[in-house]
Image 1 (tube, rainbow, N blue to C red):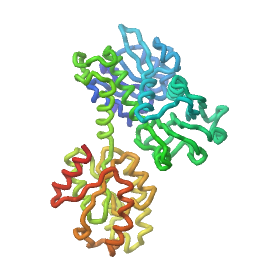
Image 2: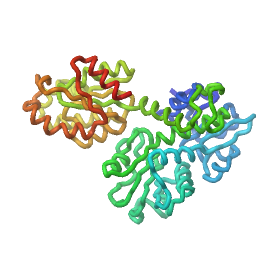
Image 3: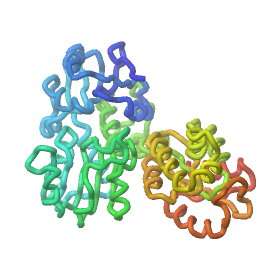
Image 4: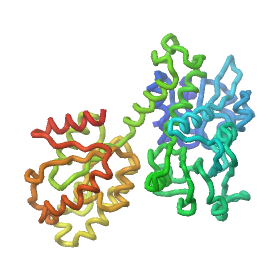
Length: 426
């Protein structure tokens, strides 16, 4: 639910569509619990700024350039041509671009260096200008901006197949349009890094494609978190590296900015991740998932139960009546819907991750936990596919292990297994 900043909220974010923004949570972790979200129509921006009834705001798509004439931009904002942070000082509005520092942090945190590289930037909006400026200041050899109607566009993008670093600043692939990518990586043979400023989902189709090719990647959550810290400092007049403990709402955070960003980033990732349980049929994913979700205060989803609810019959009856290919099609549809959301514990069917489309979908926002249980303890009742568990396990185990971030050996009790999962997630 959007909070109304016009009713006395001092700090917040303005934009056209904010329902999936993580900024409120991030600023809360930084100690600012007065931070709100305000969606504005294009014709309402000028009036909102004119009232200046706030202390500090962040600005996102599509208003980063719109707000510039209404504030005094600092050197960096003027140079880039966009503002994403505004501070009200005695009724006069001052504009800053903390995206610059945020983008720089994201790249460095991922070990991406622009020096001497050809950088291809997708999109021409405010964030594109930030990326171009950072790459230029970092001594990139060549920078090319690709837009729909520019000289360099998506029709002739193959002319730049020699790019070293690809940066996506477009919203293509952002929730709820998960699974889309602005370009194919097939024509790029020498990429050393791919950056996507999208943070929801954490791993876009573009990043998953890059990861599959062994290319270094960075998503936008590190940028969002870093720029939020720098904006927070501007809101409260905190000098870089200064102890924030004496500032109202600052929360007594550590006085090292890098440490504060790292800690806030970890908390945000944990808050918005999915915990995905994979493993053999009968390994306890449902019972572990239910208890884990209750402890973590997350939603619980069982993909097999969703399929059963949709079909009005049990999984074993669906397979017996319509065959496994039909069931797998229903399974893929359910996983695509579920995995696009966040803050869930997801229990999957034993064979769900055999399909690449399901693996990719679950990886978007998921921390994958392989729940391994002794084959002798697996139930085969009402499981028509569990005929030869030894052969099934021999085939599936490499897939489970290749996909998971953590492997947990199921304990003697449910509580023991849940505790083990919690430990690897902490």
